[in-house]
Length: 258
Image 1 (cartoon, helix red, strand yellow):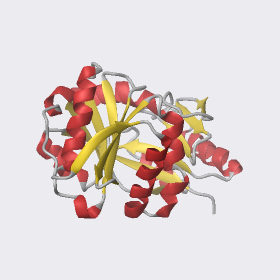
Image 2: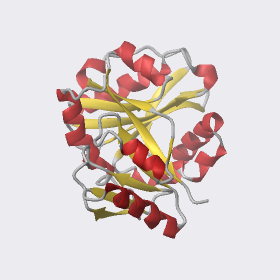
Image 3: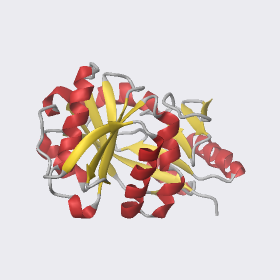
């Protein structure tokens, strides 16, 4: 899966730049050689090209990013993909004090392939929203699954970026049971699908699939060619059954202040 295919090359070309061009309010970027620091989010982020093997002193570059955020008292993520170069980049990050977080799989598929209507359970409806109150309801639903820390940042993040996001909620009896969104600021060759968290008692009933189809139909209307998802181990099998292709794994390396 981790071989460099034409689809993976296209993903690198279109998606990686969005990591430092798709910014919410109050966030800015600072180039440092081949990498770009993202500053002003809830934690720092380092956006890197696939190949940083040509850097004269890569270890110094890594340390400089760590030290920049350390001076701000912030954690920082360096996002890696399995085909990144040099191959020992993860070991270099480990040596600098970064630790790996949960590995995900980048899934890619043609938007038009997933746009067919998908059945919902009785009593569930999907609707589009840009209301601040719904962003807080989405955050509360996610907090039930992932814990309360998400309440501090998810709703503000969605609200600050909603002019570029198209958000859908799935509701049952007035309760948000799942939600997902598209980011229309990204390159229309590749647009990311985000969210997808579903309350445990509603899983396995087609809601995630229906949210994918709803977003895919809108993506087709917008002229989007490909959809991509950073898929957890839970969502990857669903996306594979739908026809998405796994193109590479991605692992965030996190450094946090002591």
